[in-house]
Length: 442
Image 1 (spheres, rainbow, N blue to C red):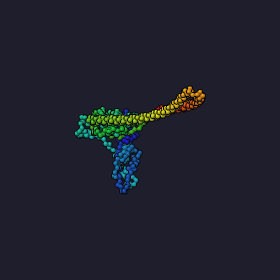
Image 2 (image 1 turned 180 degrees about the horizontal axis):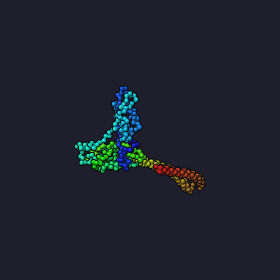
Image 3 (image 1 turned 135 degrees about the horizontal axis):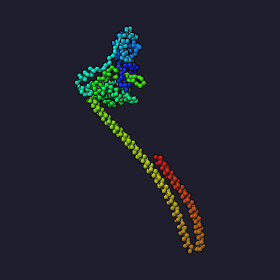
Image 4 (image 1 turned 60 degrees about the horizontal axis):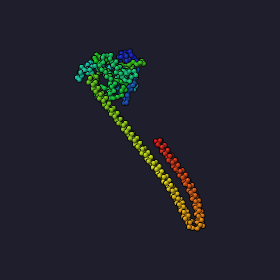
């Protein structure tokens, strides 16, 4: 992180009071500690111990930040930040030319300290750069000293309350103080770029929009004076945000003049064309994905429909087979019952025919006996008559008995047949009810 908490606001300057943004001068010192020659193999010096010694030497003052800038066998160089510019001379006087003693070393280590110079371009730097460069046209915006490039700016400094990303309008509001702005570009706000330093197509990439902690901005002023004022004001300064809870956060930002023609007409047009190409390519990819998805969905739907049709066809075939088998069974049972009934009827008819023939025979015999009476003796006739009468009576009784037995037998058979037919009818109705129930269940 490039931000630190600030407790001393005595030397801050206004940058944009409406946004609670201010400027604070850098207060840095360079501290160099000369190291002794190592005489024991494996012997080391603790940078942490050296830092603690330096901090103790500056008591009651404290470094707001102290870190190792460079370290080798001859020296260790530290970069330190203090609360404000007025304390720099105090820290230099407390450290420069002093000595420290480290555990494990007999000799003293010499300390040198001086104010740190902040690298920042001067008017001579940008004037000579654009004057000596042959591929720049100073009559064209973006190809002359008019664009300030600021990087490592915390997003929260220019993020609206309850917002999710940097506000372009807030940045303009802040830097409009130095002059009228011709153009501004915050690469992070373009979802097709991550780190745009030039209009090179490879710099165009998609990324998670608004997912960074810091951002960079290119600010192009209409007049040279606006550019110069902005550069001069930001020279050697940190940006400070005063929060609503009273805390102040300082951010170390990098400020330079644009050397890449970032906001020149050609670069802007090139980025715009590249953006259009990427948008067109993305739309084409999205259309292709939608088309592939629709084809896949249609394919899946067709397979499901085909499977359903197949299942339906199998079910229909099964139902037809069951219906055909049931009808065959019913027809077979009906044929068997009809054959049995026809056989019984034929048997009864035959018995009736035999009885009719016997009766005709008796009648014929009676007629013959009547004819014999006239030519035979009366006694014989009478005897014969008695015999015939007796036989007739016997035959009549026998016939009556046979008829009675036959009727009783026929009645029993009829009752048995009716009972069996009723059972068959009940069985058929029961089977029909079961089939109807199975159909309803399906």
